[in-house]
Image (cartoon, one colour):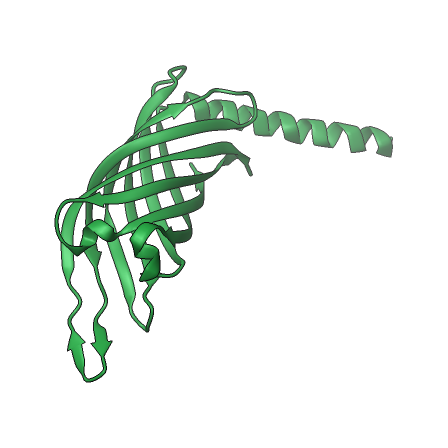
Length: 183
């Protein structure tokens, strides 16, 4: 009898996880929270080290269609060469393209938004350059994978984030990697 339970219980858990994942795929709205490391790229990597990012998102997609839209509120900080931080906060609107598979679901995203970048104060032997703030347009593209996690949707994604426009913020290029859950 114990051997029967050893087989039946995992099968029931797997079946229940599959039902909650299927139900989540039929809901048009999803809310997610995520965070992870951010890596400076390009010329920006000479000035900043590895930092972190936090993201909250609301997505919408119609059931059985392989695409949708997602709005992200985004915050990231990367340390400079001394004691300051490059900070960035903003909102991004993305088109999401999904590849529907049974257990995992790969996806791609592309979009843009408005981001505010704050640069740290720089101290040069005896005089200080005050940090600046700039609001500009940012473009991003990335890949991710969604998977069942504790009755919810877990995901991991990486994107390339680049600012466009004038000023020093155009050098702010990063690859934020996010790990999160979807409700």
